[in-house]
Length: 294
Image 1 (spheres, rainbow, N blue to C red):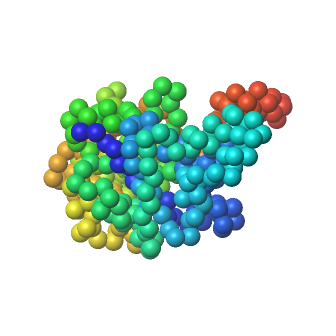
Image 2 (cartoon, rainbow, N blue to C red):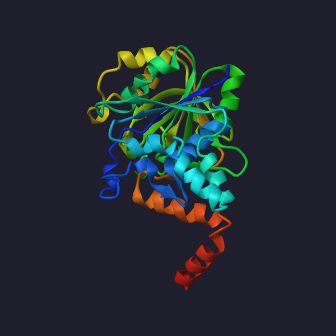
């Protein structure tokens, strides 16, 4: 079964980037010349998305404006002959993709944000992408990799990567049904559980959830009855832990490099490395890096 609907939660306040995010949504912060939200929408489109569901807040007008048509801007670019820029504007919303918004009025967590989109998703499997995390692969995006795996069996898949032991308390950490498979070259392995931000001494593994999910519709029913968990929020990881007891859920170690743009270091690293891949600025940026390295 195809995955055509993708939920992107964007209702957060972005407090770690204040004062920059006081008036500008964190998801609109640029990496080189595109906002974070644009990268993940493009990733979803490459994986076959037909509808993007932004779970947002009423104050986040720039997100909706970014994907709306701006006739004055387009006319100005066309008249001035700036065709390359005009094409960039046209490509903001990929062909065949619509953007729908649904509001999350209270900051009740990722699980609640996903649940807010239940009526739009309906009774079909769906994807979830967190815009805090960019994943780069020069051949195939993370969600496209996961969709291919999903299409083989139709079972939930969670994108994961290995993190240092001292960092496990920052993430959702998965356990595998066969603990001997930790570190295996097999990228897709059945999960036995997932726990939100465990202490290093009690972490079941070092496999961290990275903000890429393909979930069966059963998880929406579970979320309806999921109680408030870690951080005083309704955690998606708690619902997935329940789902694991009812049907197979798999961890998938994706191909690619991840950038945690929810923190300053990850965001700055993304700008540098994406900049080095950008033909327009890569040479100048490399010279600057070399200058400071000496």
